[in-house]
Length: 129
Image (cartoon, rainbow, N blue to C red; front, side):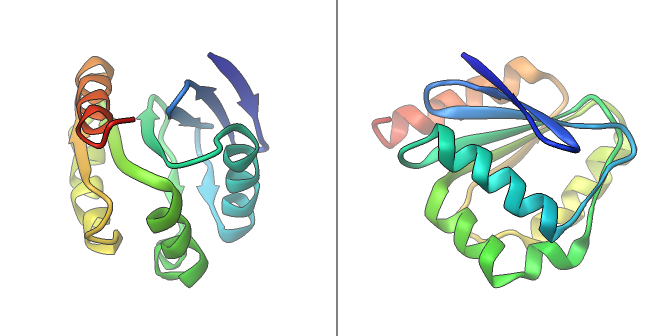
């Protein structure tokens, strides 16, 4: 396992998945996405799974999920996406976020990190990673 840090987030990098924790109050923009992808591409040679561990409250610019570059990155690099929400209001906003994601990227919301890890590992096993 390795750790990486950018302006608004830290990354816990494993062999074939990453756990991302954004800073409290962050608003993730296209500029941040480019910084995120640089860290991830520097650490993964192929596809990987993504877990957002929402220990902090943050927002994502909704237009970010409509950007062609972001959609292509998700389809090309992310096997599946799990989000851990510790508060009901965050789970509700996550349900709305599903509408923006490509159907090619399996997505689930959890209330416990262990459950998200188990699901991600199952998805990785299913594709032989």
